[in-house]
Structure formats: structure tokens, C-alpha cells
Picture 1 (cartoon, rainbow, N blue to C red):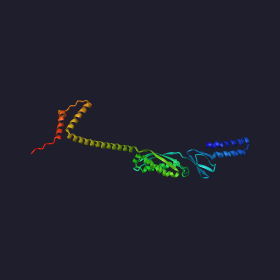
Picture 2: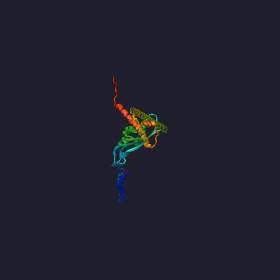
Picture 3: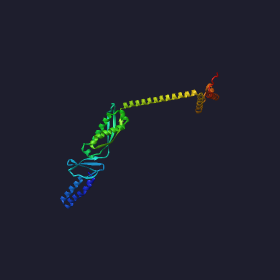
Length: 290
């Protein structure tokens, strides 16, 4: 019972009691009693998020609220209180087959609002149950028309499709679907193992391809270095000496080298080779005189 209506009817009840007990006027008491009952049942209050759909003699009288409003007892009837806050409905589809015949379990949440209170009260018997049934049916239809890879990789597209489908069906009842979110897509354990092995094989294949590309690039660099060292033997000798130096510096080890390699890395020999190369490149060849 509305507390404001009870508070407003208390003075009339008090007047009726006073008329019967003190004044000894039953007619006045009956009048006060009738007024109290009228006020008690005619004064109604809708909260900020509520709308009241009122029928008068079986026909639509109006939609009232939020706040205080009056109805005529017996003649007027509040057929529905419509909550216009955002509602959430959880739906699920168990063992639904995708387009590639894979059974999946999908859980989703629908966020909706009763935008038109009059249509929600008069166009359908129970709009909350209807929203749940429509959402579940649309979810199964979406799963049946989608591939498993699409459900797993692009859930936002599936959310948009569900929102459009459910919104089209509920718009006739004054229900607006604000958003749809798929929470989980569960697949059978055997299929999970197969997909895991497939992903591992794909990663191994990519690793082998990358390794082969690296080997090819390294081989090309070695070929270029070999050509460079082949054209310049002094650079090759200096590189050999640098390798020996870096090895002994980092590890502090003693390296045994053949005497031929030591002679080849002799600084005097290297300088001689450098002078020979320089003289052959700078002095043009002499032509024999006739």
C-alpha cells in the first residue's frame, strides 16, 4: 500500500472515529469513512524509474508517473507498473551447432530498456519473459550461421549481429536493446586438444621458416665476406689476428697455433703483402718495346 495514501487518509479515518465515538453522528462518520477509503485507493505514487499504465473501464486512460497521481477507485485499474531502468537478461545456448557442425556452449548478456511503457504493457503479456525467449532464439540462430573461428576471434561482430536481430524483434513491444555481450564460448575438450596441437604445429612451422630465412641471409653475408677477403688477403690476415686476440682476451686461454699460421700473421709479412698489393695496383704494367 502506498504510504503517502495511508498518511493522507488518516485524518478522514480519525474524523470517522470521532463522529462515531464522540459526536454520535453516524452519517458524518460514514461520510468520513467513505472519503478515507477513496483517498486510500485513489492516491498513487510512481517512483522516479516507474510508469503506471492505467485502464479506465477496460480502456486505456493514460500512462502516469513518476510522482503522485489519482485514479478513480473501481473504475480505474493500474494494469502494469513498468520499470524503465536498464535491465539485464542472461541467456545461454547449450550444444548449439555452428555452421561447420561444431557443438558449442555460448553464454551472453542482454542489456535492454522498456522505452515505451504503453506498448510494453499492452502489446505483449509478459515482456520480460518474451525478451529472454527472443534473445535465446536469436543466439542459437546466430551460432548456426557462424563458423567456429568467427565466434572465437571476432566476438564484437557477433555482439553487433545479436543486438540488431533482437532489437528488430523487440521494437514492436517498445523494448530497446542497448547492447549484447557474449561472455564465453565453450568447445568440447577433444576439439580443444586438436586445436592446441594445430596451434603448436603452426608455431613450429613458423619457427622453421624463420630459421631457414636466417640461415639463407647468413649464407649470403658469408659469400659477400668471402669475396671481399678473397680480393684483399691483407684484410683476411688482420681478421685472423683479431679473432685470436678477442679469443685470448675474453677467455684468458692459451691457444696452440701451427707455425705456418704464425708466419702468415707475422706483421712483417703482412706489411710486405700490403706493399706488394699497393705496388701492383698503383704501377701500370710495362709494355715491351719493339
